[in-house]
Image 1 (cartoon, helix red, strand yellow):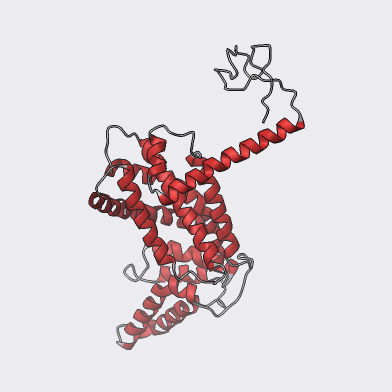
Image 2 (tube, helix red, strand yellow):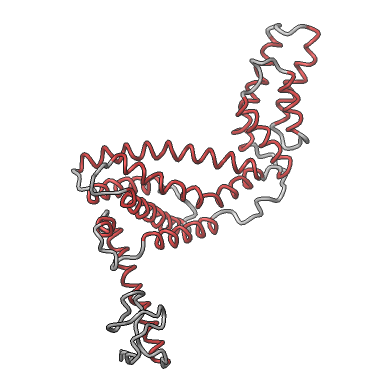
Length: 337
């Protein structure tokens, strides 16, 4: 492509600094004639696209087939040849969550539905069933005073009814029962608040409450992973202490690793869509673990044994941290839904 002519004026049009050669030493803009032909515009566009594509292809090639190489080169300062890690992560995570939303159920998760399906209720109200059985056991053993028998029967039946969609104002019924129980019979504070909030949501959404919470949770995933990125980098800085590495270097590894996880998730969803099944996801988890071990080995220059042991330690700590973040987001979602 024919290059544009240099301007006679050595003052940069962008920042006003003097340009000694073709490019401004202050802002980097090329000091060329701004009156471009359509051919020049098209040529620049093609050049920019192919240049970006070449960087993207090289980055993907190294990410997938040379675990840890992109991170190692990027930390070493060879950054011009690769796509910026944050840009790649943002784009990949956007595609991942968009595809995840497209592959989930398309019915309105917030429409109230009545159903006899009790799978969600069983998961939440298992403790209520146990409490009801304890009351019935006390009745059968004669441990309940005769004057309290009618009330005990009513309490047991009310607890059983709470798990049914047909019961209205279930939260009020549950709360009233808790106040009538003795201290040792009441549910603990966390369980009581969780069940109360779930019952309020079920009064609002009916049997569709599980889908409503799931939809809220899906929309919170990007925020949750955004918090886990620096946490994973922090774990790496603890497990791999080196004087020549700073926290930002570990953060680059964290971003690249999460990007690969999203990319593999995208491939898994694309492969699973025609078959309408995801039974092979356990193989994906194994693949991610193997990739992590190889990436740690190559990036931090470790033996395979050390990389394996330390990767297990990192994953255990990461799983515990993720569980805490998951619970916090769940309580937050229950609070705002």
